[in-house]
Every structure is written in C-alpha cells, then in structure tokens.
Image (cartoon, rainbow, N blue to C red; front, side, top):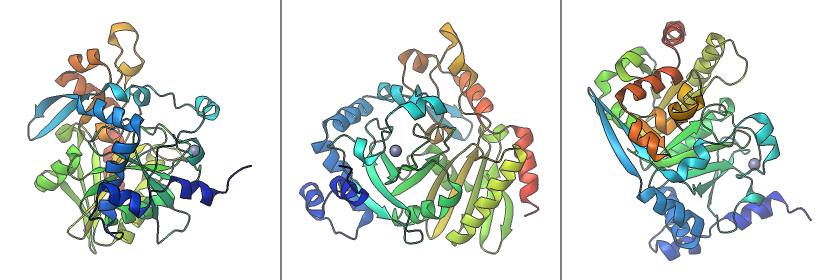
Length: 351
Ligand SMILES: [Zn+2]
C-alpha cells in the first residue's frame, strides 16, 4: 500500500530527543544548531555518510594565486559519481530518483524547513553522502518536482535568513550542476567556505557598483578581473532582492534567446541584515575537456562550488594536471560570454 506523504516525511525526521543525544544543550528553536546536530547525528548513525565524510577528510588541495584572489582544486574521489553523472532527460527518466523520500537509505534522516511565505515549500535538510565540505547538506523538497528557481527565490532568501550567519544556501540550475534536475533541491554549507563569499565580503572594493536605488544595490565583476562574470544583488529587503532577481532572470532569457531557465548557479546569505544574492550566469555546463578523448579528457563538471573558486577533481590524474592555464580555460568556457554579460550589464542599467 502506498504510504501518504506525511507518513513518509514523519519517518524521515529526527526528533529533538534524537538530536539532543548528540548535542545535549540543543534548543528546539535554534535552527542552525538543529542543522549542526543533524550532521553530528548522521555521522554517528549512517554508515554510508560516515564513509563519504572520511573520504572528504582525506581530500587533497592545491592553491593557485591570481592577483588578489585564490582558486583551489580539491582532489575528492567520492565526487566521481556526481561529476560523471549523466543528466540527460532519457537517463533521468529511467533511474530511481535518489532524493525522493521513499528511495532514501533507511538511515538517512534530517530536519524539516517549512516556508512561512509559501506552504508548498517544505524542504528537508539531509547530509550529502559525498560531501565537498565538512558539513554539506542537500535541502530537498518533500515532493518530486523539477529543479527551477524562478518561483523559489523567496524561499531561498528565507533559508538564508534562518541560517543566521552560520550557513550559506546555494543552488545549481537543472542544466548546470544539479545531479537531480528532476527533484528540487538547494544545498547548504558552513559560512565562509565558498571562496567567492569570502572574496565578496573581504574585498568589496573589487566589485563595481552597477545600480543603487531605494535600498538596493547591484554589483558585478568581470571575467577579465575575476575569471568569471558575476552579479550580486544586495538589500535589507528580501522582497526587493526577489523582484530584481526575476527581472534579471528574464533579461538572461532574452539575451540567451530561451524561454526555459537560463543557466545559472546562485548562492544566498544574510550578513548584518543585508541579503546578498550572488549569481554566476553560465554559457554551458561542462567544458570541452570533459568531452575530450584519451589523455585530454578531464572530469571537471562545474557547479556552484567550482564557480566560486574550488574546482573539484575526483580523479588524481586530473588533480595533478590542473594548472593556471587549464583553470583560465575552463572558466572562460563555462561563464557567460563577455559579449552577453556586457549586454546584461547594459540592460540592467535600464531597469
Ligand atoms: Zn524525486
């Protein structure tokens, strides 16, 4: 007999007692500590996650200095499945969805976030079994519903708010990094882990003011200056950020001559009452080296984390081969072209 959705959700949720077993001082209204306790709980009680987490711990890193900012590479073999995932419609239709509640491993459990603004937005924080960060969560909808951001930007900002300086929320578009394009999910990682987050907060002077009006600022930085074309919307008013995001989304559709979601990766955070939405518009998902034959082939499949400056390489040979030239080449192929980006900048000034 098919179980009702509410039953499936209840079965997946950790109780406050489960969480207090790993974090005794936990208060039920302290959302960021509920997230942290979920991580602690799953490390103890879900073997597959513990294995993946240990895999993450033995990751190796290289750093590349580009003037005032840094790019890192992470050699993390546990990411092989995700980086090499086939995300075409046919493959997706045939496989069992790994984010649907009924398909999760029995030990995988989490906590619920219910949007105050949209009662359809019920999302569950689950530990990612192949983490890129010490704490790395998939925040997935309880329904099997496609990855799309246009109607969910408010929920994203709401999440950024309750994460209260402790976690950052990010999103990969269905055709540029999401390995489950058919099942809606955000992701979350601890604050100050994403390199662009640090670059933006520590070097505000490097980002150009594009527009300032009524408590809203739009800034940008170009590929020439930063290897990637990036746009940032900031305001103390989440509704304004959401509205301007939708305007920019439509401009990107126009510039890309498409009526589906323009390729993009996004992260959202709140600091000192300001909401910041950082957008990486994209030209394509995977660089040419991903499809090359033989020696030239490299398993580099950029999502938000990579766009922020940490390129994840699941294969050792790629990790050893990546150099400054390859980094420049990869970013120049996957970031929105300079021509389209300057068109976008131009159109935004007319908003
Ligand atoms: Zn699903």
